[in-house]
Length: 319
Picture 1 (cartoon, rainbow, N blue to C red):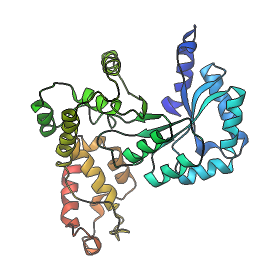
Picture 2: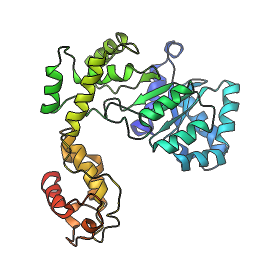
Picture 3: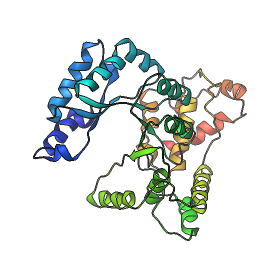
Picture 4: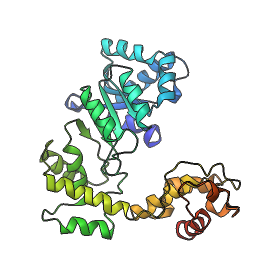
């Protein structure tokens, strides 16, 4: 689905003239496109044709949660993956994940996976699979591949108060290097996906990865990352826990989602116009401008947040 459906085509062309033998390929089966068992082989054959290869090394059931995993089982995918492995068409049975930890634990324990891909970085230690999920996979001997190691690039450029924490440390490294070294310090992690847009970024990433091993970071360096995380969190605009007791809103506002988008923009000093989550809320007609000032949300909020006032601030800052 990536690059307008052309990513595998591009990669297939790039890996001609002997390069295919020098790499391992990871790609995904979009599980929402599997409507019947026969779709598994149809999709695989399409991908093999695009990639101009006879096998895929790491084939991932894409973005599954508990509901999607049950769908995969109903389509016979776990059994078919093992058969394809025996046939040599795929080498490793994998999945990528974006849900809560309890669902991750269920899926991980429900099948003999060869690799798992999760979102993880020093700000997401308690989000999604989180550190608990990483350690669970490690305890089962399942290598973990990391996506969003820089949180979509948000951790590559530190806000002023966060940069001050980095600058005060005696060892000088870029925010990118600190973020990657923190990840590569974990023995459970097999590799880190790195989105690059320039040759210079590729070269810098290779330098970091080539000079970092699990266990390299000192206690002082790990404490630095804890301090950096605290500096980021100090930028939080509203202490919403996302409990959703304020929902449904009579005016149609998606209150927890609005606050989450607002916090994200302030934490990472990003332009609200570039915040995909907030722009989607607006396009759906659930933005803060619809607030009726009825107070129903404030009466229900266990944090006693002044939601009406905060929504007015959100309108001013986010729009």
